[in-house]
Length: 185
Image (cartoon, rainbow, N blue to C red; front, side, top):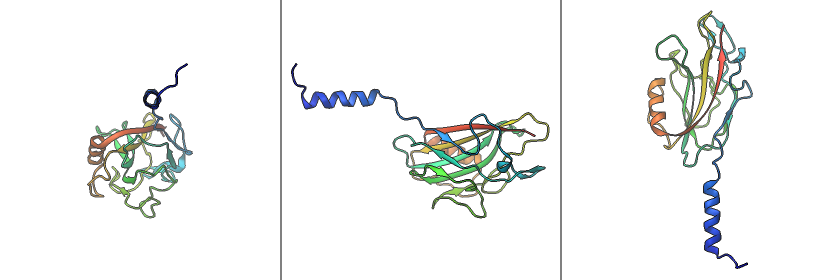
């Protein structure tokens, strides 16, 4: 059998790598799983809710190649507002970030990497604001998303609305990892 040339071996290796699927960008939380009920420690404290208002611990796998920064959002598409409800809007996380501890979204004592920005939620303040759907409503979906971005940072002020941040996230997106949990009362 004839020996294969180095060029031919390199070409075969390149083709094999190109044909293999990229690692999935995945998001997990030790506080709740996809499609699970959100525990009381993560529920809002106010508006008739008596939860702990602690942002969930999150961890994610390696984001897509070319990621230069990350963002995390929690959004309720079922809120009776006509436009949903932003519960956490966090951006300008360094690209090498792979997790956030429970409580990182506390605006009074955040536990976030340097340069990260917590923007205004629909509660009107920065930081995490947990679920608190209207009493008797069907359980709402809370979509937790890590956004991989092709920009070093989003040029937005800390007062930017969730919708403005969302617009910029979509424009700079390389990919997302999502989990959706539920809460009703």
